[in-house]
Image (cartoon, rainbow, N blue to C red; front, side, top):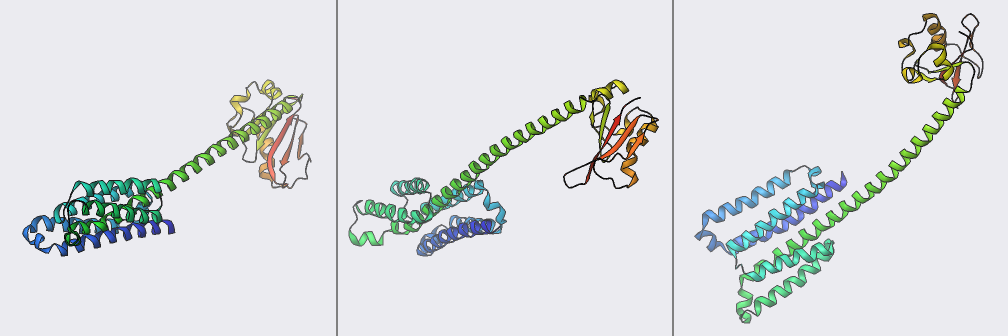
Length: 301
């Protein structure tokens, strides 16, 4: 939340500098504005509308890098249009703008962009001066009005590059974490499968039928002897509720009785020993000595 607000503030600061530079140029060239009022009005309206739209955007939108590109392209377009309408636009300024964008993107640092803007501005003004101006003409030249735009472009370009680098770093970090978690999950699955296999093999080693239910009455283990006794495969029974399995109601009641009896059982104590049906029933407790399941051992049908 704080980062989203910080990003929005920084972009609004950059756009404030741009708007102020445009305002200064418009006032400085008020005579030109009077000569082409419609174009000037439409341009000023476009600047005001863009400020209103971006200011009213929710701060969550500013975490999206695509939004930064949209703002950057919008501001770059406004700069080019302003220079075209109100000041002298020449190829040297266009080159200076794109050189600033390129260097700022490489630097990926807002602080370094200020130094970049100073250097590019110095080169730009030197080229303008070499264009045949004397000292007086140079200081009266409208090319000086383009200087703030280069600073704005430098700030925008470096901020955009900085955000892109930050997002890329986050993505790489997430990918590493995702890879690590996948390995952990695969490892845990293998461990669980190994434990499940060992438990099944252990239960298969018993001569009698072994059925293990969870506390909700779902079958979790159904050994080979149980398959022979009931004439059903473990794959048909496992994970199904005992109530859905076609065995005698009396046997189901005996198996499920511990779950509803509310009797506290000492660990390893046989709760039900029904010799008529040949079945022993007891609870399985976990490490915290809580009921984790029901063990049913059928020693004769």
